[in-house]
Length: 162
Image 1 (cartoon, rainbow, N blue to C red):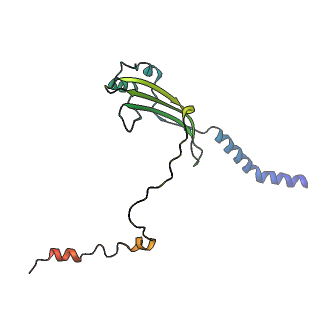
Image 2 (cartoon, rainbow, N blue to C red):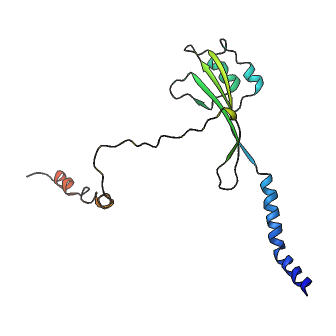
């Protein structure tokens, strides 16, 4: 009798055990996502400091992922490989950044490579900038526009004078 009862319990939990096993196996082979543009090694070798210009670099490496915000003389080619589980934050598996520096004449002056090991975590400044003016309460914000947009001024302007 005891043997029969344990067999029923096993049959009841069997779908749960199989489901947990399938989820575990699926988690082992999560797909990765590759983003960005990583130039080929042979193309990078053709970029020569002191010789190559912007047009040559763009022909060899393609359009840069981004250009430096404060000067157009630094180009970035960025590639990143990530893996994400469901709605969780993606894990960065690999990252490569090639940085091409140009002089004022548009000639390559240097080429740098940064990888995932070179990355640094930054913390944004949480300070706020005070704004001029007064603070409105929720109720003032809610009813603040009533009466501001009426047609009384429009009607007077549209009506002909005596």
